Structures are given as C-alpha cells and as structure tokens.
Image (tube, rainbow, N blue to C red):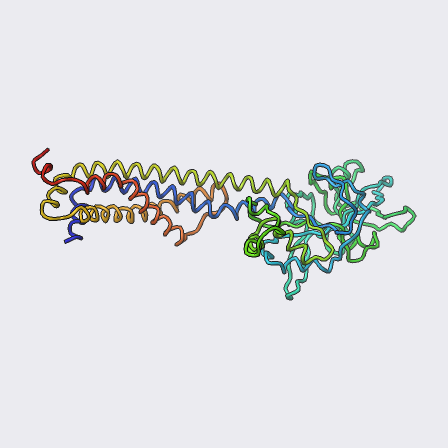
Length: 429
C-alpha cells in the first residue's frame, strides 16, 4: 500500500515532480562538475606549475653564510663547499619520492672563453645534466636533468650529449661575441695559460635569467675543468607539493608525535625539504618561496572559487525544491486531511512525503551526476587540459548531497503538512 501511494503521487502530479527533479538535476550537475574539477585540479595545476622551475634548492651546509637579495645569491661562484654526486640517487628513496619529478645538479665556475675569430671573454661556466639516467639504490634508473627541472628554458638547436665536448651558449653571450650554432669555443678555467678545452656549440639558450650570459656544458666537463671530480655545488629539485596551510607552516620541532607524523606524511614543501636533508648528508635544503608560495596561493584561490560555485548551486537547488514542495503540499491538503481522517498519524504522513522526496533526490541526483560529469569533462578539457574520470566516491557524495538538499529545502512544507488538522480541511476551511 505504501509503495502504491508513492507511485500514485508521481503518476498523478508529474508536473511538480518534474520541476523538483529538474531543479535537483541542474543543481547536482553544477556541484558534480565543480567537485570533480576541484579534486583533479590540484594535481593538474601542481604539474603545470612545475614548468615554473624548481621549488627547492640544495647547497652544502658547510658553505659560507648566504648573501641573498630578492632571492638572488651574490656569493662568488667559486666560493664554498661541494656535495658528492654519488648521493643523488637517494632523493628517490624518501617517503615522497614519487613527488620528486626532476632534479639537476649544477657546478658553476668562472671561465675564460675564446670564440672563433674573437677575443677571450670571462664568463660563468655552468656544468649540469641535460638529460641524464641516474642509478637508484633499489637497482632502477631515473631520467632527470635540467631539461625537465627547467622546462621553460628555450633552446635554439639541441641539448648537449652526456660526457661530450658540446655546450650551450646563453643568448646574450652569443650576441655579444657573434656565436652561432655549429661554432667552436675554446674554454679554460683559472689561468688563461692552461690548455683550452674545445667545445662545439650545439644550441643557444634563452632562459630570461643569468644563464643567458653563461656557457652551459655537461656536468662532467665542468668537473674536469674545475678539478672537482663527481662533485656539484648546487642542486635544484622540482617536487609536487600540497599548498601549506597553518598546520603545514608550524615548526615540526614543536609538534607532538601524532601531529609530527601527520605533518611528515603530508606533501608539504617543508616536509619534503626535511626528508631530502635526511638522505643527503651535509646538505642544506631551502624552499624557493617565491615559487612555492605563488603555487599555493593560486591553488587555494581556484579551489575556493570552485567550492563557492558548489555552495551556490546547492543553495539554488534547495530553494527550488522548497518552492516546489510548498506548492505540492498546498495542492494536496485535501488528500493529507483525508489520510489523517482515516487514521493516519502525523508521523505516517510525514514519512510518506519524505519517502517521495528521497526518491526524487535519488533520481535527480543520478541524472545530475551524469550531466555534471559531461560538464566536468568539457570544463576540465578546455581550461585545464585534462578531463576528470568517473568516480564512485563523487557519485555517492552527490547522491548524499541531493538527499540533504531535498530534505532541507522541503523541511518547512513537510513540517506544515504533518500538522494539518483533518476536520477544517474536509469542511473546506
């Protein structure tokens, strides 16, 4: 009998049910799209932000005191200590090893460069990896290098090969000395009287930074010129991170053991920095704040916008459901009065009306999720370049939200219906 009453309500009043279901479907569609994109946009934007460059820099702890202004290190390039290249594989052994997407060691020295048909020029010589396969402690390999850690560097030509006598020349240095791809340079470090090393120019670099006035060579070549075998001066690390909140910015030394474990097991930039310092003895790991903070601010604002859109869609759906429910209750006053006159209590009447609304929530939420996934894929593909996939978690959340929105929106009309007295209604008052 109960199911017959519910089915009869849907068959005799399709207009109200259709309007309520449509309002729920539209609200849940927008909520589905916003939630799906919000859950996916963090990882997507974090990977896009890696094109901004490294967000961690590793230097020797025993180095001299830093002299930085505006994030630029003004210490002499030849000053300070060095770190062993053999430890770099340990970066892929930390807890958040899969979040380390690239790293590039650098050894910078002062050098004398003699272009073809030119004069000797003093400039910075930077040794690094372009595309390097590093052996990991677990027996695997990892492909990394400055081509991945600094993807915004534009090369006219190609990158140098490992352990080759090839180099990349910064665009400003190339213009001043008339250097082009295919030329040969003579390079020596220290006194000019040393035997020069011939290097073939295979690319012109445009980075927008100090590298535009430098010569970049394979790390092994710079180590030979500087007499620093298997050592480097600075390491740039590009890691996927979670924007730091108030908890993430707390000093880990002041945290209780449970809070420390939570902080350590969250991919905050500071927790990844600590883990790197634990596996690289004698290293000082610092966060490049202008990159990390910028990423966090943008991610937070995008997510806030999406959650505001979700809240607005749910509020609009609740108001629409409330209006439709109020109209339906007024239209069914006689039916409600008759049920109560035949012995139905307020609880029974209320349960019947709630069951109808929950059935509408199930249908409207399911339809809204289907529409929302299509909208999410369209928005994700057009704006973020990736389409969110189907998720049972999001589906269950949307069905639950549809039920909550339906009950909240129709709470006042249903409460009024349960309090109707049958006698005045049946007398037509």
